[in-house]
Length: 215
Image 1: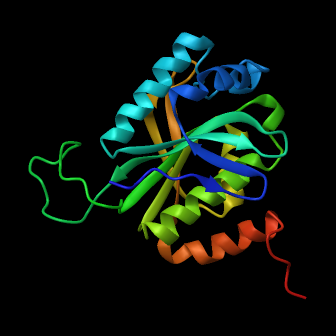
Image 2: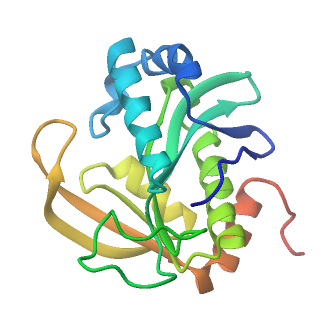
């Protein structure tokens, strides 16, 4: 399974999620919660402890890589995100297939999800740079075939942010899961393939100011 890493950018650092940061995450999640209409975000310390413990258990199985998001401009933890649903296509194919199959050194495909930010960090570029750091790890270190991103079909803000990355809209899966508001949720699916990453990376680096536009 992939080793835990810290991913550092210009204004964001993604740090391995641990129980040591629970109180900081509780503070971040306690800002204006009206922005979480379509996103399930732990509320209070007990929920946050359970959230972190569950993520760490999946990480120990090689199924997810969860991060706390540090906004370097303010030196605060302002949310969390993860590379998740890690699948390993190397080695013998287990039968029956499932989460107890053999785990390889690096994933072959992954999702980016469980992303939430404190209200004060939304719309600041923190989300964009966080995605850039995780996509860079996935495509350039792990060499994955595909990254999947998804959002509640009603969550226009999240869908716009995913589209702005340059991800391809794959369609809507109806009645895909239970929504954060306890309704039956339709989910919009997006993907980025390995061959598409160079163009996506260039677009992100321009938007993040990491490179200058060609004259």
